[in-house]
Length: 176
Image (tube, rainbow, N blue to C red; front, side):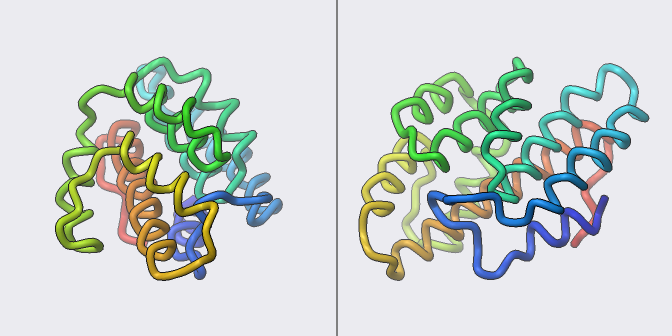
């Protein structure tokens, strides 16, 4: 399973702001089977977090439909967070903002505020405002701003993925 995480978190180029198709269909099948089996081995009270981890892997693979199906079943702030990211990626910006508003205060957002500064000095992380920035940029020609937003988007997904893994296992996700 760590091989899946490694492949998805080391993508080059980074996932686009608005993907048009699944990045790697074979990886999508592996995510469904391998992560599904892993989740079944966890205690029942941790399976929701494992489901959230699986949704995140699908999103990192640009598999919006698979991620959406899972995120809809996760009735937690983390599920709402993945749901918001998924709608932002598909270009349903109003719906994304709705889901981010449902998240409330999430530990990943605090870490994202700290990390965003390293990518974009002066960056004040707010996922709802970020949706608007992505909406404006997605309609424009690819440039340095697009690349910076892609780095922020990738960082956000990876932080949330690590959070889900820790909640599911009680351990940090090994460095990939």
